[in-house]
Length: 196
Image 1: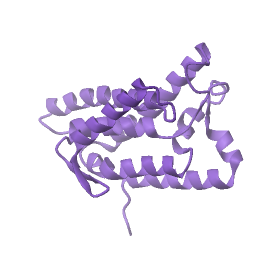
Image 2 (image 1 turned 120 degrees about the vertical axis):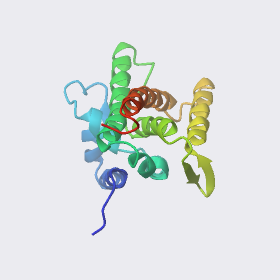
Image 3 (image 1 turned 90 degrees about the vertical axis):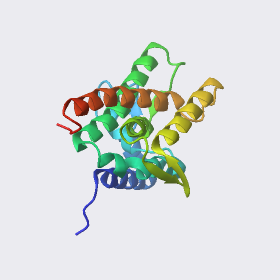
């Protein structure tokens, strides 16, 4: 029997959820983040993480997680892995909803995708396994280099006003992953290099 990793399971959920989206618009409408109704339907903060805008959006998140997810998962507790993923994704959606309620012109009403959660995990990987080598389309990078390139590109694209992607979500997700991991790494060091 094949034993699936947590990373594998999340990726499978991404793909299954997207399949439902393709065949049922009602499915997406029920689970997408909608800043106007999320206060009364809070499950949307979580379910929106498993929706994707299109096949390229799905591919970007699943491929990114595939590249470094299993390596990271082998170095930290599964509970920490899930906390980082969901904190990154959910907190960004909460921030988006609060900002939208203050000024609708500052952000999006709708939100979908796991990019913030994946970005949080990438920031974690850059700290926990910085020298781990990963391949992106057959080009080898150290995890820390991959994270540096990604977040630098996000900052540049945000600065020049590229609005086709929610760069703010990626950057805030990365910061959440960074802060959580700083706390996590301290705990590891305090225990002689072992997780609790």
